[in-house]
Length: 111
Image (cartoon, rainbow, N blue to C red; front, side):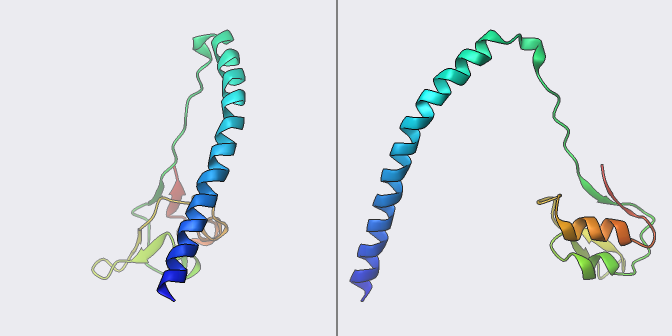
């Protein structure tokens, strides 16, 4: 049975690499076109990238509402009895937006 699993795994890896090779050939053509477009644009057209961070301000009263709504981003500190941020990933999450909106002390912010 283990031999079958190994054989299936090898076949899957081969199939994925073959598909990836076909996709890379298509991407080469589109890359050449996009590089031509890039070279024709002026260098001063660079866009500024804004990075947002999830923070909890000192106004947190430790009610735990954010933790109950979104456990992906928040945890409760055992020592301070306040919420703390545990993840900066997926900042467009529905649950994160709900936690920010429902914070009773308005202590959660994306800046």
